[in-house]
Image 1: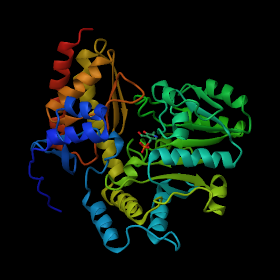
Image 2: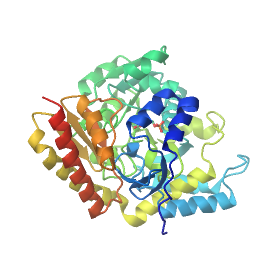
Image 3: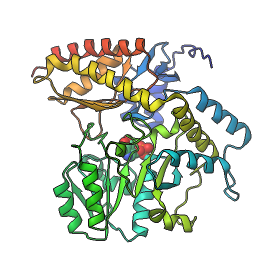
Image 4: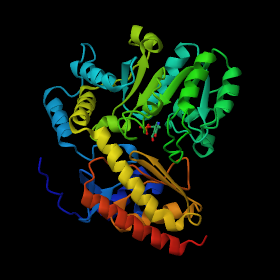
Length: 421
Ligand SMILES: Cc1ncc(COP(=O)(O)O)c(C=O)c1O
């Protein structure tokens, strides 16, 4: 599909003004700080702004592994709009059934049952409720873990900044350190046969924290020993982001429940899912009204998910993510090497989830703006203020990778010159 960039417009200031009057001053001010542009188009790894510039998107909070507007996903969604975008919810929906099968083809063996929802936080909610239906009312989560911001999900998103304004949250939530099996065991022992554990295989918003080898396997063992349900949140890490279909693949383990989101959308229509074993899923499986949502599993979103999985199979996206990720990580490490021990504390990553941890919090915002000024988007991390995060698409070509590396070199040089260590 050939696409020409949208014609430049000069609506930037108007949009800021509309935000100020109707959406919120905080977001409006942020928009101004970022340059005051509005984004009006996208294609592959590129975002088009209303001032005629285009930006290479190495951010996107992990959504755009297939890039923006992947032609096969867009075509499937168009087709679905032309036939049956939303369902009556009286009859069965073939696209939902096919999308569930396609997803379950790639989840670890035994994770066969799929409950589609509209966002990552909703997937977390579904998992917490499913756990309660099994009597697992004590929740164990990890510090710096991120699982969404709806009330239940927020209860397990371990960050006081987001939690404090909304307390009291869900009761009986225990926080343990990520990658600390001993701490987890202590919490599990205190809640034998009534706990659900939720964690990410690699913490994303927590600053790209990769646990030591053996951690996930030990978590599974501990959950079995103490009769806990295990929910692995793959909303950011799954769907190929880490260069494997799932983060759990690194240790070949199978949780009771897995959460999927972000990339499942193909970057086109929001959709997320809770995937469970037959045993764990049983309460939802038997009673279709136990947990429902009007728009959940809509044909239009399921068409996007189905096309996404199919495109990933056809284009070998997971292997591409692994290969490109190794090149990005290697390039970023080389660029950061002269600053290591000074402004840069550590560069870490797996596949196309890469974090650069600085010694100064200020460096993240500064470099982010430097990069935007030079035409490249990157992200901060919600639960780790010193970590700049890269979640590029797998469809970045050599020229775009070169552009990123050059821009990162120049941006980091400027930031380092401004921030004393
Ligand atoms: C691991 C993880 N879980 C859950 C969520 C929440 O997803 P959503 O923002 O779609 O509600 C996110 C979002 O960043 C996430 O990274």
